[in-house]
Image (cartoon, rainbow, N blue to C red):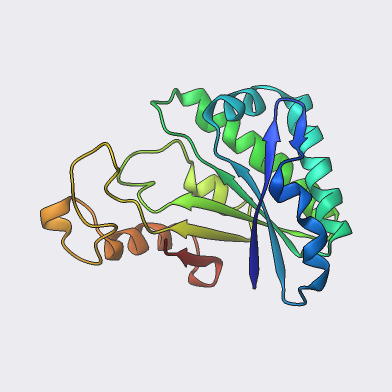
Length: 188
């Protein structure tokens, strides 16, 4: 499988950046293709999560590109870095549900890309809800120790006692919500 990273949202729909410009290249790839909507700008994410019209535009544009370039799956990568209010979790649930419903209606699949430390750092993801509104989850099992935080391993396989969390606990936490066949672990 090839994970194409990916399309960039803006307050007005998709941005025609370098990744957008290189979509033509994908015509030559014959493996299963997964298209990522990379929501990594916190300011844009806030706009998208608050505005149903922007959400609808992004969903429609992303699905049109997925179909045009023969992607089987859209991976939604929502990255948030600051403190959250409860409404952020509800906004994410609403957006993911809307995306999942439209994707399924277009004979595509929806994957979510989530932090490996989502349980440990209390991120704004309602795992029970999200597990019911996606076909797969990609878990980013890297960057456990952040560049501006305490030094430590990238993402320790073991050592929960020393580091507070580890890969083994992460897998256990994800398996509480997602069946193993829906989990793909990503290493940096």
